[in-house]
Length: 104
Ligand SMILES: [Zn+2]
Image 1 (cartoon, rainbow, N blue to C red):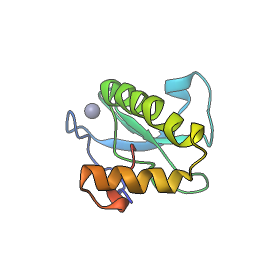
Image 2 (image 1 turned 90 degrees about the vertical axis):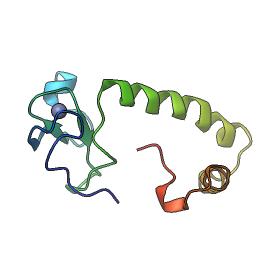
Image 3 (image 1 turned 60 degrees about the horizontal axis):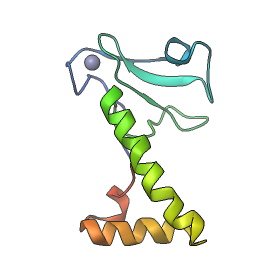
């Protein structure tokens, strides 16, 4: 679980807990996020909590995460494997713990 971000990883500016309407035009999903006060980095929160979904991400990282899901998700969906099984295999291949193995 990621800690609540206080300062931006990219530009060191203050990070605030706020509405995500600034990014999406209107509130999207649960409507909240942590956002850098200077650059475009942000991260959403788990529903009904202030727990961040992952690390703060700038535009480039958000695109890379989408690309990873685009490549990874069909593997377990097409083979009808459990998602958790696919993440377990990925963590073995990357030689990292299963707790660290997610794209967020
Ligand atoms: Zn920033």
